[in-house]
Amino acid sequence: MIGPPPLALYVHLPWCVRKCPYCDFNSHALREGLPEAAYIDALLRDLEAERVRVATTADRDRPLISIFIGGGTPSLFSGAAMRRLLDGVRSRFVVAEDAEVTLEANPGTVDAAHFAGYAEAGVNRLSIGVQSMSDRSLERLGRIHASADAERAVAAARAAGISNLNLDLMFALPGQDLAAAREDVQRLLALAPTHLSYYELTLEPNTAFHQQPPALPDPDLADAIQQQGFEQLAAAGFERYEISAFARPGHRCRHNLNYWRFGDYLGIGAGAHGKLSDARSGRVERRVKRRHPTAYLEADEPTSAVQTLSEQDLIEEFALNAFRLVEGFTAAELERNTGLSAEALAPGVRAAAELGLVSRVDTGAADPIVIRPTARGLAFLNDLIAGFSA
Image 1 (tube, rainbow, N blue to C red):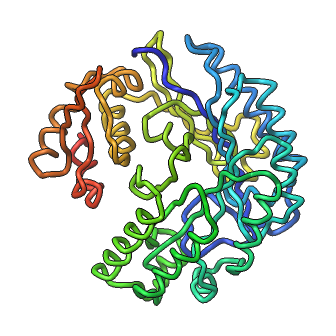
Image 2 (cartoon, rainbow, N blue to C red):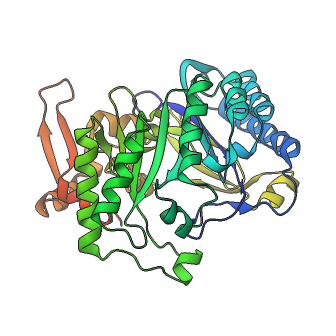
Image 3 (cartoon, rainbow, N blue to C red):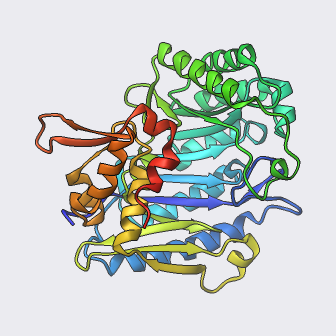
């Protein structure tokens, strides 16, 4: 490897008020009181074990470039809990001065006091799960908030001093037509976010919607809604830099970019995943924590699985992430973050190029050849990635 990849931290808080019928994340509806203190205790024990593990690698002094607190609904936790968690992170790791610290929030579970507490704890970016600005669509999606709650949440975030805001918006919703989709985007843009996650509602296995599917727009209408949304976002000054991520200049999500560029990250919390490289040995290891919150809380050892990635694993996982990026990647990025040479991906790249799914662009820079997905490749990403499987 040419030096170690950047290092980030993901924290999973698994509870929510109610499980949404489309959600396949590791989230669990609260049946009793939130075990806030006990869960923060467990996270800090988990974090300490990660600190010890990082200390055994050649790259133990890497700072954390970003922290992402996801769920579930992290905004169920108090500002005091977030302060305790983030103080615990800062006491165990060097955190970069400009580190991006994101917390996911549900518009139905936050108020001004919550956001003020998060800002005081060190959160400097919020990702708010708006999903739609249509109250009818929100009801169909099983959300606990209304569009007015989203507007209040954005205002409360700014009042607390957090202006770096991602808003999630889904399209191709039950009963949605082009006019409704256009209005959804317009109303969301009126909230003036710095970043947007804009993605199609899909019926994932093991969800209520998969078992009892709602009537969704047909594929042609879904494509038309998507293209219309892309045009609206571009006209509003948002750049599409990843398959479903749009940002104003200077506001790309650094944490997610680290995933897509195959950087390293520690994962703590129920069901969290982590990836850690050791430049000295060339070993790249994945670690998964116990999935169910009760099992995680009660376990002496939170890790449930450890995997050392083979060369083929590295090829497949790098492709899975890197081809999500509109700008693609260079050979130097591939080698730095995987230890592989460009030749390892060459057969897959050649096959994908013949299908019109990728292009090779000579930028004239120091590392001139950029391999990037074409518009067709982004539209048929699963086909593109499949070409790198064994």
